[in-house]
Each structure stands twice: as C-alpha cells, then as structure tokens.
Length: 63
Image (cartoon, rainbow, N blue to C red; front, top):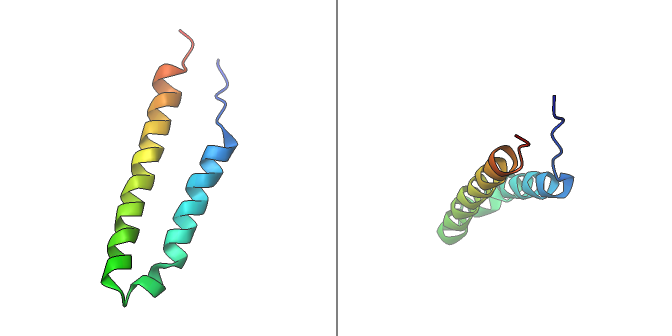
C-alpha cells in the first residue's frame, strides 16, 4: 500500500487563508466591496484545494 505524501506548506497556506477570511468577515460586513472580495477569495481557495487534490490523487499515483 502506498503512503500518500502531501506538501505541508500548501495545506498550511490554504488553512491560513481560510482562517484569515473568517477573521476578516466582521470587518467586511459593513463594506460591500470587501465582502465581495472575501467571497471571491473563498471561491479561489476552494478551487486551489480542488486542483491540489486532483494533482495529488490523479497525477502522482504509482500504477
């Protein structure tokens, strides 16, 4: 059975971006432009995580 290795820095960066988005939410609640930026940032983070998981599970598997 193959042990899966994940790049810890990528996972740490994604988690840090998510925590930052959550912490900045109260600041953005009053400002519509910042609120839209946080939504776009969250979509970008989800897409980056999805692409990372696809790369790890599809392209780096030993067959």
